[in-house]
Amino acid sequence: KAGVTQTPRYLIKTRGQQVTLSCSPISGHRSVSWYQQTPGQGLQFLFEYFSETQRNKGNFPGRFSGRQFSNSRSEMNVSTLELGDSALYLCASSPDGRYEQYFGPGTRLTVT
Amino acid sequence: SQQGEEDPQALSIQEGENATMNCSYKTSINNLQWYRQNSGRGLVHLILIRSNEREKHSGRLRVTLDTSKKSSSLLITASRAADTASYFCATDPNGGFKTIFGAGTRLFVKA
Image 1 (cartoon, helix red, strand yellow):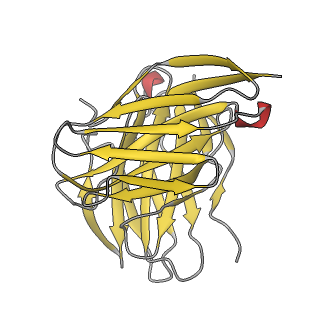
Image 2: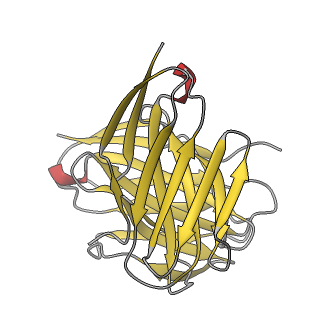
């Protein structure tokens, strides 16, 4: 099976812009989770989707949003980018949202 | 604040030695997992231990879980240079669909 893919792998944006990141889960996996990783805050949970429904979310401002499509592919959007949004954004999939998660390589976002 | 806290933050050992990392968490959990991350890449799942288990083995890995102390440890035996990576514990607070990662332990294995 193909692994989790994330696009783009690298992205440079300017403050105030918005960005959309994409994640394609492993075939058959219905749960997709998103994480933000920074040197200062570590790995932080953003949200989890299952069958197009957000089941849980972390403590991030409303500028961070996501969605999941019927084929389980997921996107996350960050509006009005701030310098502090520079991070590695990781997506992970699993069959049902429990137990082992399979991570993609991440999208490295730099906000200037 | 994060659910999991790990210590040490960094660990440097010689090849062939054992490496032990510890993780503490705050709420009840259904399971605890350990992941490895190589240099800013995606995480790789290592092992999962359920809340009703006390110890689990997988190859050179041994994980223990003490739910009364809300802590876990990961032991890597006979370390290799290829084990150099960051190791994270992850929990599902109150058994929900939310995975919380600890701050991680950076392991450096010298050849």
